[in-house]
Image (tube, rainbow, N blue to C red; front, side, top):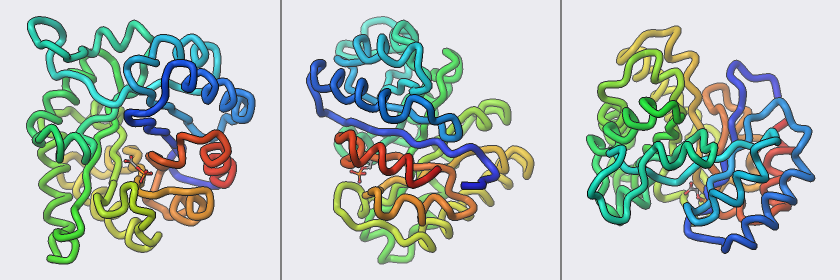
Amino acid sequence: MDKERKLIVAGNWKMNKTVAEALDLIRALKRELGSVKDIDIVVCPAFTALSDVSKETIDSNLRLGAQNMSEHNYGAFTGEIGAGMLREFSVKYVVLGHSERRQFQKESDALVAAKAKAAHAASLIPIVCVGETLAEREGGLTNKVVETQTRGSLAGLTREQVVETVLAYEPVWAIGTGKTATSAQAQEVHAFIRSLLVSMFDEPTARRVRIQYGGSVKPGNAREILSQPDVDGALVGGASLEERSFVEIIKNSL
Ligand code: PGA
């Protein structure tokens, strides 16, 4: 696919897979996708599998991501994991502000922004998620919600940092539901986010930021969604848990 920005497709494994299962999947992905150069491919296992999976990805074209991190570097924060700890496993990306964390852990935009700053300070690339609920979309609030989340979650980042940040537009109503946004709906919001980035930073900066779409991306719809001009990749949940579907998503997007 001929795109202005290099596509980035990330698999968010969420709270799934034992270490043994994670190793089976990463080995299969390496076999099938080991020669792909034109798409940045990222896998985000649970923390417990990062160490073993990193040994498989280190000498490959597949990159490792974490699903969350603390805004603090170290200290008395029971149960938390800091950016420096992720770096020990050659983690390069970290998903921040996923809607499940916004919903279940009540993560705020300010917290996501603090985490994004801490990620950059450790040279990790944050994948910052934004997206509206069904009620918000039906109430005509999509742009307002996405604007508040984007401005709040990127607050305090420099131009250089935002270029090294991936955004993920994930309409909450499309996550894990089998309901995908149409490619037109995705493009509309992605273009809106890019226009926001122009007003927050500047045009050249906004043109360099990659914005993934997430929410029920499958082999059958990936190509159409990713061919939209402002869609620069995908954040894939359910379909990233199986070798065949994740491989097909990547291959269908080449
Ligand atoms: P899904 O999840 O692909 O299962 O809808 C996407 C996500 O939550 O990142």
